[in-house]
Length: 270
Image 1 (cartoon, helix red, strand yellow):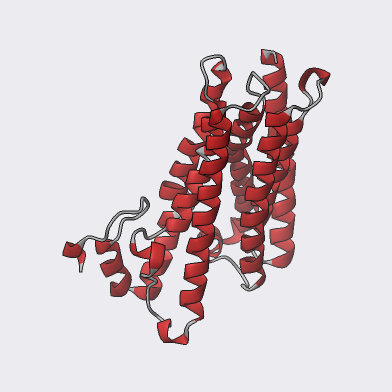
Image 2 (cartoon, helix red, strand yellow):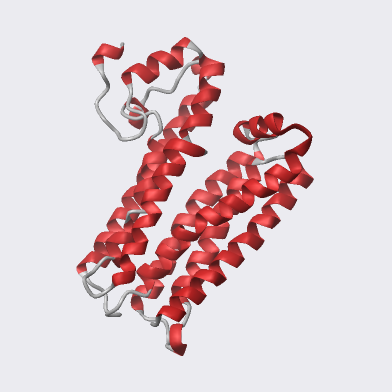
């Protein structure tokens, strides 16, 4: 593939994400439920990433790695998107986005549109990492491709387990008003975010090689996802919400439990 091929693919994926997140804004405005934003974002990344993976660059038939990456992207997107869709169907609004809307006041519709376009912009390095991994030189599968599969499925399994443990905790009436401190949640305050981030390590594992200088671009995916989850729309607004609703119980949980990376609980925080 030439430099022009990569740049054209990057542009096409950027336009596609912008259009799809404009649709997410329409859905959010009409339903009043911003929870659908994350659902549409996840399926949009999956759709654009999978199409980019099997795109026949130079007119060539998609090879084994392209299909492999497309399948990995689809599995990730369907699992996470399905989970978020079920969650969104059961709520009237996402507390994080609702707080943004409250702060924005009358400008909320316009600010929300800009915010969702920023999400589209932020997704570009993610879908491009998928594209770069799929179109790595040497179409035959290598050991690192199988390692990439392993990394992604560990991430998906860990995230699914964390989600299931949290759901089980919340559905028990005896836990009303308490903080989930069971299973993976004992080792990390956000194990679902950690394993989601781990999924994005799969693409550099597949893409990086001495004969693929574009592979370095795949590193932007886990770096950006870490920044988003830990410093922007992941942990900060969620923990603010938990502190408002759980107070000292959550402060004690913060003191003894790692924020992101799973680590043994800190006895001094008890």
